[in-house]
Image 1 (tube, helix red, strand yellow):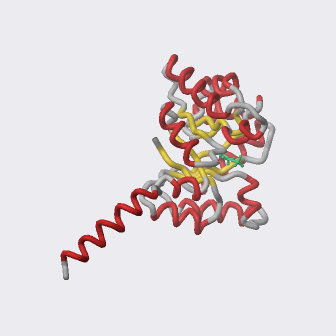
Image 2 (cartoon, helix red, strand yellow):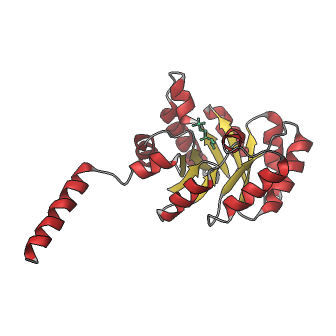
Image 3 (cartoon, protein in one colour):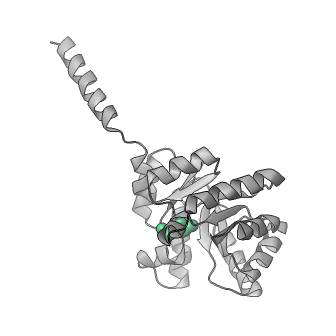
Length: 218
Ligand code: E4P
């Protein structure tokens, strides 16, 4: 299972990379705005800085919603760095663009996926990743994790190469459930990734081991 961090904050990316378990980064226009980055030049520069912090897989999202515009932006984004994965929204024009980009060897992440039908279409178009938003479905009292399981099953049935990227992951149990289902990748905030390291019995156990070791030294 790959771990991506869902942020455009350079410090958080550095911290996650230092954990030694990070495989990539996902961003979106809202996350970029949160960092106060203004203007295309600054946005592209910021993507480059993110790429410098990780080994691979930096999702950068297009803003265009028409086929020609998406392809134009995809070309610019892909030129920033070989680590860039072009993030394209799950709309008709987006799917057409994904089909073309995949034929050209450009990696894509089909984003804003909320149904199995959308995921099926994205895989048929050759998306590298498909991003179902689990947390946002939970927010409207739907079952986000059930959708992830459904997509894994459908892709397995047909051997689609598209990887299921569980997105809008909010807490460690989302990650565990996704792992149980065989989800290929999750993208989560730093807090959720860090929470995977923690257990109170580990802390208690370590404290006792260290105390006992100290006794053996006196
Ligand atoms: C996915 O790539 C999105 O950036 C992200 O996971 C959305 O998460 P949110 O619902 O917490 O905004």
